[in-house]
Amino acid sequence: MKKRRIILMWSVSLLLLASCGGNQRGADAPDAQTGKDEVKNERTDQEDAGAGDDSASDDAGDSGSGAAGDSSGAASDSTAGDGAGGAGGAGSPDGWKQAYLGWLDESEYADMCTYSLIYVDEDEIPELVSNTGVEAGGCQILTWHDGTLDVLQTSRLYFSYIEKANLLCNSEGNMGYYYDDIYTIKDGRWQFLCGGTYHDPETGPQLDENENDYIYEYEWQEEPVEEAEYEQRFHAVYQEDQAVTPGTYYIRDELSSILATGETISANHRYELIIGDLTWSEAKQACEEKGGYLATLTSQEEFHRVQEQIIAEGRTSVTFFVGAANKEDMFGYTWLEPGTEKGYGMLQLYSALFEGYWLEEEPSYTGIAEDGQEVTEDCVALIYRSSEGRCYLNDVADDILSEAPSFAGRVGYICEYDE
Image 1: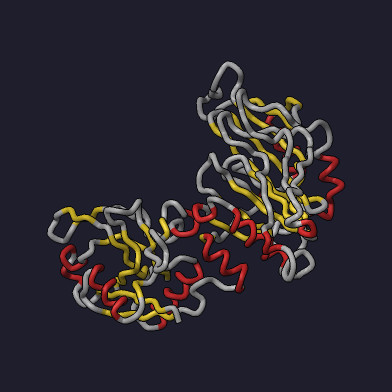
Image 2 (image 1 turned 90 degrees about the vertical axis):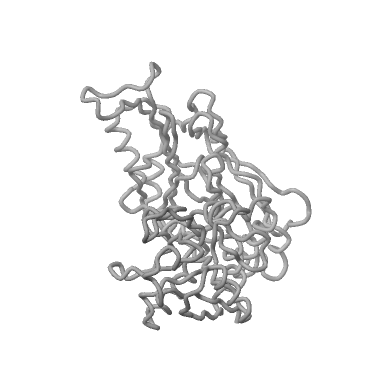
């Protein structure tokens, strides 16, 4: 369940199958389009790559779920791409990397998603999570085994898993209809294991006698059950106290670099911390004149490297401009990465570039100057919070000193060099 996530180790898979026995669930909310009546996992056979469309779909039983009006929870079509064959293909230890890279190359909206590598089953090859960032798009979770690439499409965004336990739970829903779908990987393919739903009564939403909680009707594998039995059956299969969600997301370019080289794009970049009472625009120009650019922190690894340098150089009291802004031709704050047409939108790529980076309640887009006047804040600075021992992003005015003259001598900027 979305607020109760768990998993049982694969070593007791027979017990899991027993707990999941019975009819698999097929009924869904009225008018729901979930696609989970059949888990349509598209497979790519690397040995036959280029010989035509080898995709196939298997029935994993009637496993319908999702909220009314949601998009499909079935797996989408996928191919591993030409890069998955030949050297580095199915027979290579790095075949999975080429398969994931091929899939990214063929994905029409790859640049609009964020990605994470997780370990669902017991092997040493990670699964690849593609997070669309919107509930209607959900997540696609790729697994690769012996030349076969298989894709699970979640219904909406939320899922959890237990690392190397071979169980993943898609717990989601809305508007009074919710579900818990549990999946496993069998013979290299995603397979629906079991699940249940809980929803408003047919008469509509109802509160309990204390008017504190909604009353739901529960079904496990299409069988009506009480809430306590639903939770007992769910927890017999999926131990939520062991479940986790993806910890680190990357933008497409960073993930591609990790797959191709084992490192993020900026792994060998150099950073220069410069103290100077410049505006953001002047700092940007100054970095470019020095052969670099205002630092664009597009991965957690890069963010932490710069943070460590600030601490090591003893400059934690300085507010440093970085290469992100929210100017008139942008949609929200954007990392102005050189070589890209429009940079990387922080909100669009939220889980990789926004979440966990910003000071609380920021960005605010406006602020109050030391003279009490409201000012526009459309540039980004990196500040160090000593109470937490870490840096955060904060939006500031292009000219910090016009907003806060007391910061004189404590304004700086960070130049990044691709060296």
